Image (cartoon, rainbow, N blue to C red; front, side, top):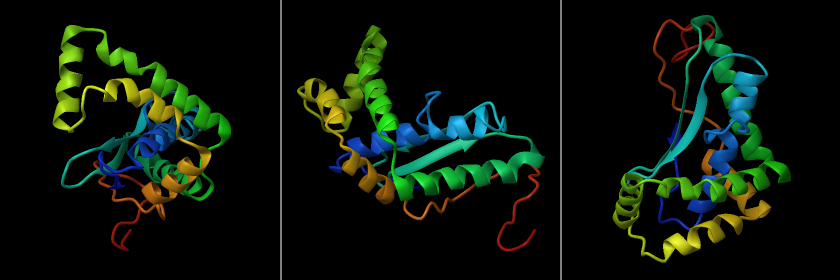
Length: 176
């Protein structure tokens, strides 16, 4: 993980789009494509934004065999660095915005989800009008916004990593 962007920050919506492109849970994300599809290193890999008031963050996770841990982490770091340096492609940006706007309605398909999401929005300080504005805000994210926010969110692509198991091919604190 690494520091994120606060929910009240004007760049949050663009960060949400950038995160979706990086590893936001769909089969089109860069991490899914590079770590799982192309290399078969894991079954699951993702990233997400947390909006904790004191410490918003960009977090991610994966699991792999001990002997593939170093390679998995290298691929993840490389994709983070590439997105920060180059930004998304036009196709990635378009797909992310379509997914994020099209899937938003799924947060309201049961009474429990409706109540939970409305409570979440209230806790985050949003008025009822946000429900009408949200998708337009996602659609308004430009390529320039995405590139700028990718650099801001991912920075130099250095990650704080916690590893469980007996991974091979990794160096911790300068020792093998």
